Image 1 (spheres, helix red, strand yellow):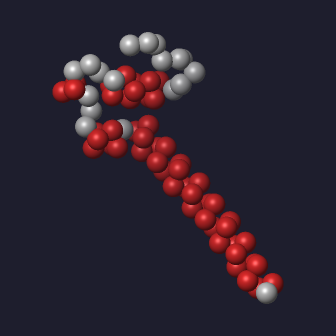
Image 2: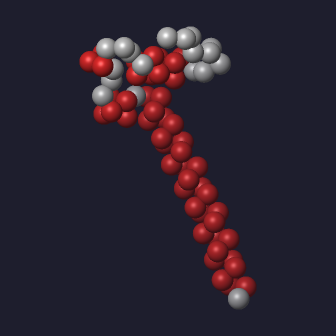
Length: 68
């Protein structure tokens, strides 16, 4: 397996390496991947950003409706 660039975090590299094991039995299950701290942290960040965008778009729509 080619080396993963060091520009990625150690947590990310570790996760990717575990998922790319040649022996399928050595790879983490989907449940284990979803419980991985790196994945959990990034899911939370994604959800927070999505929530912020939704609030902004919803606020803009409300303002437009008031103008009509």
